[in-house]
Length: 289
Length: 301
Image 1 (cartoon, one colour):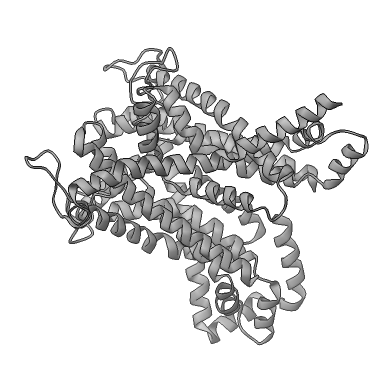
Image 2 (tube, rainbow over the protein chains, first blue to last red; image 1 turned 120 degrees about the vertical axis):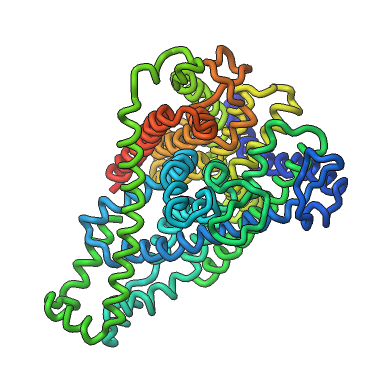
């Protein structure tokens, strides 16, 4: 009897320990990233690191300015949103409101399949198909902001579709019926009552999409061209923060290596901000509901 | 979900039954609505077309390259076989699951069965798990490189890669397991307690078995992520070409293999073939997961 009691308590302790591993993991990741990245930033100089436009780590003396890459990440993410958000939200509207049940059975798993495709496959597809197309029709060498935006736009579709669709479905049917009864057409009812009511859920989907786009690495490395510059047109090459890490980590040493880790810290801070705003949106919509 | 649509369609029909002709007439009076309809349809078509084009293109280009040589046991520069990387992928997957599943399931059991409602700690754990699932894989890769490879002196090895991936898939396993534990009706627990079983016995003998399909679906979902992962592994398990003989060896997984092929640009045909293998693997895994989850759903409904 006593042995049983001890075992119960012990196992509860074990379960508790496993539960706090996720806290421990986040704490360790933060400590390692910041402890390695912040000193490097201090050594380079914060304003020089974040605002500098010259990245030549192998020069003597070297310079480590990641401003162009921060802008690059933002441009690529914005481009992905321009392509992915309208198509994603409208597809979600279609799935939730216009889709015949028989088509839904095919289309819904199809969007989920899109989410399962590994990013390296997207990147390879972009490299072999989209890059040559851009080279042919828009000029330049093809590896460009445009190529990265198109591929990332497709990659964030399933995220946006999934989250938006469940937000749209969560709107009470009475909103729609009320609009219909007032004489609005089906389309008008959907776009004027249901979509505005599902606003915060749809926004959450978009924010999640931003997180996915800004953190994407392997697909971007293959198709974005990776030149350190602020692109002047959409067919110019661009290097993102993620690409910078993957490209140079293999051969970097000393301060160069630390600068790359610091690049990771900047990326991590971006992601933390996105996660925080995500949670803010969520708690706001919970308070409303 | 499907049931839900059917019922909403059934509810609407009597109110909203108009003939095709009437509908066209109303669109003629309200061209904006017609435009909206077209835009919505077009967007859905685009989404579907993107997937179909991607799939068909990769299959058409890749299937002719699925030669027996691609699956030879040895990798060398004349024949960039993907067999060693398939075996490495298998090893990494098993190792990662061996680490992540006990922790993920244990954490879910704590959250679903032990923690009291409104507990502050539970909220913190959930927030942290959510944060973990938002971290991009390259950041995991960086962390794994600094912690497991450098600080713990494991060097680039399958073990370092597996630990990195285990942290990455932990939130997935936690969430799906917790959801599946919460679907077990309380009457099961009460019945078990009523017969004199303790809490631990109830969890192990009653709750875990009846939520097994959900847990399994989550684990399989995690396998899909492991198989497709590149950025987190490239600087933790490395890109050595051979089959790893022990867990401290470096070895490339299938996804890294494909990245290297695509990046070098020398073996495009083999890269297409590898893409097909990767796609088939991931889709097979995801379909299996959906199938198991559905089975659970139908049993409950």
